[in-house]
Amino acid sequence: MEFLDLEASDYESALRQARSTYGNAVRIHTRKDFTKGTTLSKHKRCRITFYLVDQKPLPVEQQSEKAAAFDAEACLQELLASNDVPHALHASARDRVLVGKAGHTQTEVEVGLLQYLFEGVQFEDEIVARFAVFVGAAGVGKTTSLIKTALYLRARKARKVALLTLDANRIGSLGQIRQFTREFALPLFEASSFKALAALMPELDAYDHVLVDTCAFSAKDGEQKKLQDALLAILCAQECSTYLVVGAPSKESDLSAQLQHFSDHRLKAVICTKLDETSGIGNLLAFARQSALPLLFLTDGRTIPDDFTIASASYLMTHLKGFSLDLSQFFPAN
Ligand SMILES: Nc1nc2c(ncn2[C@@H]2O[C@H](COP(=O)(O)OP(=O)(O)O)[C@@H](O)[C@H]2O)c(=O)[nH]1
Ligand SMILES: [Mg+2]
Image (cartoon, rainbow, N blue to C red; front, side, top):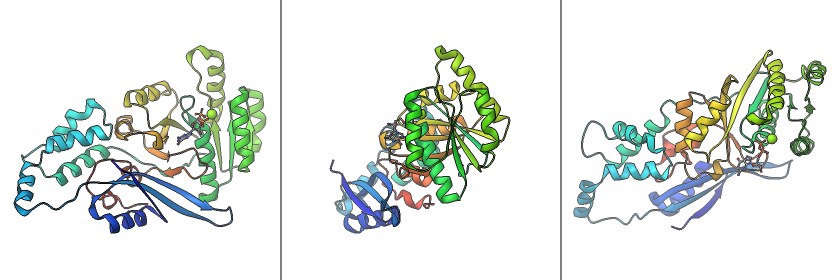
């Protein structure tokens, strides 16, 4: 299959341009939103990667044969597989989508599956609490997302934001967050003891939001984990929300294991990273529904601050594969 790229000012324009050249044969593979230009004159761009499906018109008699021969079951199975929907859900998806009558059309199958996939998936678009703690497995993208979130709150919401790391004992991670905060001129506070945290509290009062970076300790790091949990308890006695950061390429069972692992924290919402590295979002949607936690932010690349967006059904739909419908019509872009 050949993939084509096209860049425009936004997703809708890119899609329109692709359609004006290739008609309804266009199927979106991935979408990338980014900004171009210098600090003084930045403008938003969107690059779509798409492929074409065979749209040769059939003679009228073949068209009706084809319509009669449309295999709804096979179509559904293909969509479930190409979007990495967990196998455990295939039977319930089939029951929901193909229920009621024989001879479903392709549109009915696709609309039914969309409804099934997004049913119960909740979204949130704001950080309200003063302390926002990011927890999640090592390497999932907590620190990177923390910086992107801080820049988003500062630039788009005009909030006064500081970063606080409780990960101050590990030289590598401390170096990384110091470098980022220097580069983006964000205030950074470091605390790895009660005394240090207590001393910082009056200064932290000056900020609308303090975003808190943590370290993912395993069971064998018992003492360090206890200390971090105790420091977090001090913050959570204040106005505090905890966000679980997960990676989109993980299987639904691994995502659920992460949820279990961090269940001691009262989780407010999920931030999902690495959408650019996943082959399908079925696992993520299944997890979002099953966890009953809203999705807050999504990231789809390493670039700070560009590869970051507020979670929405319209954005996630651009990561679905194999649909013939124009998915942009289902959920207008934010
Ligand atoms: N491809 C991709 N890489 C990411 C994304 N977010 C973070 N990363 C990379 O993942 C690695 C670990 O990120 P980091 O923020 O240090 O993870 P942490 O250990 O959870 O704090 C780094 O190399 C990041 O550049 C993303 O959305 N997409
Ligand atoms: Mg980190």
